[in-house]
Length: 95
Image 1 (cartoon, rainbow, N blue to C red):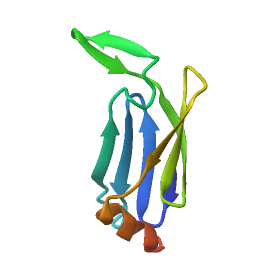
Image 2 (image 1 turned 90 degrees about the vertical axis):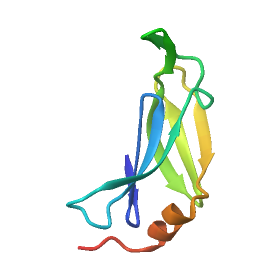
Image 3 (image 1 turned 180 degrees about the horizontal axis):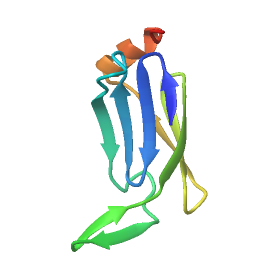
């Protein structure tokens, strides 16, 4: 996970998530990427549905999230273009 401005980005399993931490006592999910398109090689079947378990570490830089794959040594890049997230990235974290 990584923090930028007032956003906490986390990666794990099949999801990359942005969480608004402008009020640290009340974190709010404001965006998610879910799906196997980023790292399709680690496919599991849970309840008869395909699930992807591969997102691991991430870094934010210049409007992009660089996400590593835990199981197959790949790198995925997601562009951050949600205006709510971009606005919170510009705000400094409150002490």
